[in-house]
Length: 476
Image (cartoon, rainbow, N blue to C red; front, side, top):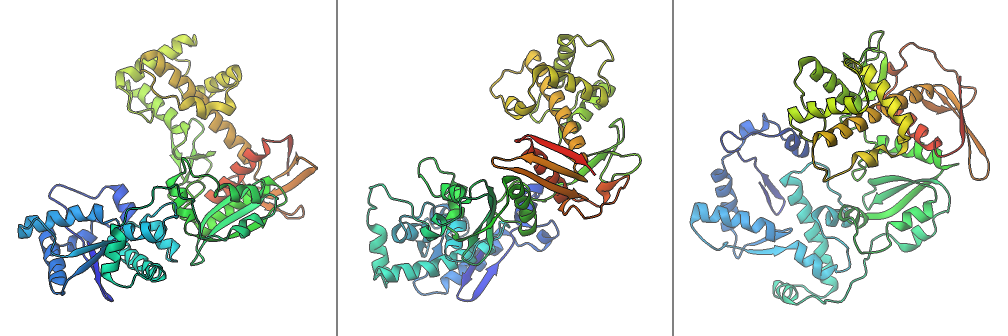
């Protein structure tokens, strides 16, 4: 719990109730560790610290962002420790003030408004930074209130008491419209820039002008997180690229370099590469003579096949799919799939035989480009027949992962040529990076020991992008 009075900021960790613990997700979101909680105070101790600060002020005024949410917690504390049913201070809600002073902003979240006024929040969810953000928002709103000649608390109360106009508002953004309208109609990478200079988002485009302007069109059904980002965007930086493939490559590298808070895909995060032995029984984060198969993502369909392999060995089907399915039903579904495919006993008992079976299914059904859509089927009753179909899709996805890895390895040192709309393009890849034709490359038995997740993503992107065109790959 945190609060500020003037320049003095107080923040206190509150002890967890007995038998409660910090989940991994909460630790990542907040940065709080179990060691931090060893010095935490009880809820009652923190309450009395807060109350002493408030009660020491004459006619106390507490500024809170989205006070409707916080007020219930404060009331609960005052009822528990003082037995009162009303708070002994007046609250000003910066959310409500922003609704009156900045009515055309598309969203008024604390993250969005803090960035709008020039101080984007970091990724950690901590009360201390939210108090600081509320203070910055309040300072920005005071300027907006002055523009409306609202200089005192009584005038503010009057403003907040006025009913809002019900007419449809037109969204307004801080980015000067002409900046985006003057962007080139060329492929490249764009960067959304905050007032502070922080890069909020990096994206690629076939047409920079069309892609960037698409963010600012329309109002119905807009993504709230995207709107939150857009009210913080004060500038756009672009890099024109020779073609969309090179734009996609640069996007990957820039996301890794800048780690923009509103990008989700292509971030390094906690991702690691994994390698397997020839039979996929053992795995390692390092490629060596034993673990030569890879790289694969740690959450790939290969891992699901390994779960199936070990389940067959123990005759107890552990969780193979991402959704929880009864052990017996998983087992029945597997053998029903084998029966439907006329697979005799022992035909697909190893991971390699499962991959081979998946390749057969891929060739037969020609679903390589649509596997993700097929896997996303929902509201299907989980009968053994439905689970059998899930196994079929799993085998195909794993085989697709296997094929991707083979193609990715082929790109580590290669010359790639593809037919664009107006000409033929050519790029050299040396040691996993875009290079000049003259660059030397090293031939190693285990090249991934000097390559990173950035290189992996880059090669995967090149592979995905050139598949959109007629192309040719020549190994160097």
